[in-house]
Image 1 (cartoon, protein in one colour):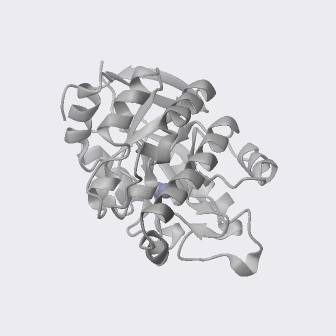
Image 2 (cartoon, helix red, strand yellow; image 1 turned 60 degrees about the vertical axis):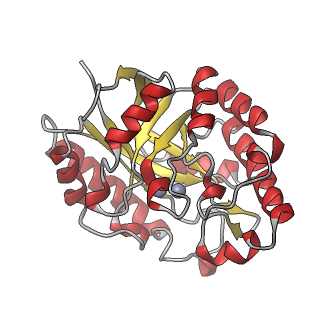
Image 3 (cartoon, protein in one colour; image 1 turned 30 degrees about the vertical axis):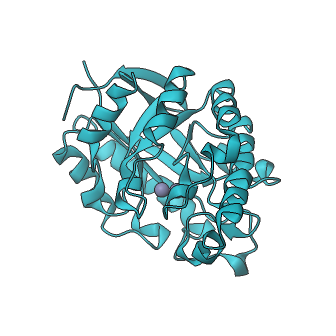
Length: 276
Ligand SMILES: [Zn+2]
Ligand SMILES: [Zn+2]
């Protein structure tokens, strides 16, 4: 039997998503999904409290309540849809121990690893546009720096799934060659680490207008045996399962017929439906 899970969704706690927790679950049911992973942003574990931005992530004291709320939804919806407890956690070089301790403290089903933050600079924030606009050489430098962090994130062993793998393309700024010349190293690092990657429709809602990862990168990852999950990165209930019909077609075109589903941080590969 086929199985469809949206493996990346947020809640209003992060300060830049809307709706009530339960509405996300109800939209997942309405879309015919078998499972939804709630994966809100990790609190700013790597920065002192005076540098936490409440419009980007929940406060540290909110995390236990978030976990409780998602576990309550898991119970309440049992038999109707599988609710998975997840987290989207930033990878920050040098802060691995801190994140490992945080992740061990809760019974997560799935942990997504993201590189949004590079040495005090946001890869995907509109405030970073001036740097991208400095020209092709600077865009290549961004991609190279990002690739280095991504390889380290994969190797860290902290994450089950790497999110939006080619995130620096968000505003449409492409490197002169894929990943500024190191795409092969990125794919090898992900495959060696045994992480899954997400095929996410979020990029289609952004200026770049293309899923993460690009079809060409997805094909390379699939050929290297990297497991795939499907995701929307929903920041509103109506975005749950958004664009999944096209994601299924894209996955199939890349030769991907099964998706990974994570329970208590263990993956099983389940067949994707032919369409939805
Ligand atoms: Zn993200
Ligand atoms: Zn996200």
